[in-house]
Length: 492
Ligand SMILES: NC(=O)C1=CN([C@@H]2O[C@H](COP(=O)(O)OP(=O)(O)OC[C@H]3O[C@@H](n4cnc5c(N)ncnc54)[C@H](OP(=O)(O)O)[C@@H]3O)[C@@H](O)[C@H]2O)[C@@H](O)CC1
Ligand SMILES: Nc1ncnc2c1ncn2[C@@H]1O[C@H](COP(=O)(O)OP(=O)(O)O)[C@@H](O)[C@H]1O
Ligand SMILES: [K+]
Image 1 (cartoon, protein in one colour):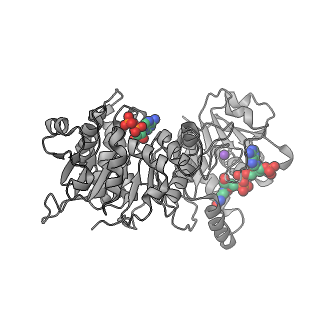
Image 2 (tube, helix red, strand yellow; image 1 turned 45 degrees about the horizontal axis):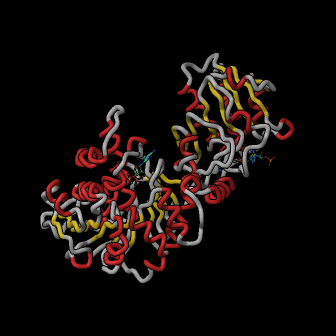
């Protein structure tokens, strides 16, 4: 029986990301129980410690604070005061001097820091604190702040809580934004720090705990231990059928390679057997003698615990998709199957009792969106990853793994995961076919679609990194072949 719930043990520390509204609620509850200013001091202490670690030495270093007039600016000013007390030459550039955070500014001045009106200080600083705006921001950066987004800098930029200009809830960047080397966030990660383009602006993210009591996170990123705990392990009683059989309906006379690659991923995803059906049966069995092959199509191929349909599927994709969806097994639809699904719309999935997992790249996601009347393009999808994945999941009633520079997995129940292991080296032809086979194989072992998709993305990213080593072009088959090593590295 396939389990559709998450098998993730509760005690495992996912990297969790909460929305601004959740942070605000937790903040209010905690602030009511603590003396005034306690949370800001906790935040400033963690921020100052991270900055001190980035400077070769604090004494004599030039630290510039870009201070907005909210508490984000307050954090930055208090942190700079701490650095000034250790001998840093701290200056504050107040973006709206009349509304500067009064206590933070007083602390800085008392510690020997000063205010400057010279924007050139940005380029001379050994370290810049971006305290323009945090979770209280709205709309694009204001004119006084916008020029710092493109100004040349010498030292690292440390974003306070969120890089200014990045939407904390989504990672969307709708105008100029500060590009940070390090982001020090408070209490929890924000989704925008884990999802491109925001994640790219955030640089290395460092979390400072401030004692917030938070609800379950709507967005999370699996970590090594989480993935290790989810990997299927054969028991003493296991055989190839009990471990799960994954069916792969892929490849066509025109695109036989996609079949080979999807099967290569499926063979290394934990299922006990791979059943292939399609026009590339001969090539598949020649390359992968362990695969069971037929040209019969999903309806007559024999029992499986999950179907993967679509990579290189060509003209046969619609028929294969319909046949797979008619079974009571989980179905992963990729590539040409997604084009068909976008054309036919969510009605095709109505009445399914087993889970459906869709694995589009941004272009395929745009086609799926067209299927629900949302006409857009790949670039727009990539700029709004979380929103796009969630909308598709909700409207198709399916789990959606949206591929790209940050892979996002969205469940129809509203939960989302982001993948932390991606690398640009994965952007090689056929890489997505390997991922589809791998994720389908994990589905066949009994993982629910959210876990199967996020574990597959994690392993696929690690395999890409492993294959690329210190940096070299890789092929899709290299990714598949690296999977056993990365699997071992997680379980060893
Ligand atoms: N939550 C917690 O637990 C804790 C939170 N803490 C900290 O508080 C931060 C939140 O502080 P916050 O609420 O004061 O809002 P914040 O981010 O400073 O923004 C408001 C300011 O930005 C301005 N502004 C708005 N939009 C703008 C734009 N597009 N471009 C430019 N400016 C813009 C807006 O201007 P105004 O509209 O007033 O003219 C106002 O001045 C949070 O991120 C964290 O750092 C910690 O101290 C510890 C515990
Ligand atoms: N810049 C990037 N960073 C991380 N992962 C990437 C990047 N570019 C592509 N990928 C990954 O590479 C794979 C490409 O899949 P896909 O677009 O379906 O290619 P193909 O159709 O050639 O198989 C996906 O897993 C995607 O997430
Ligand atoms: K900021």
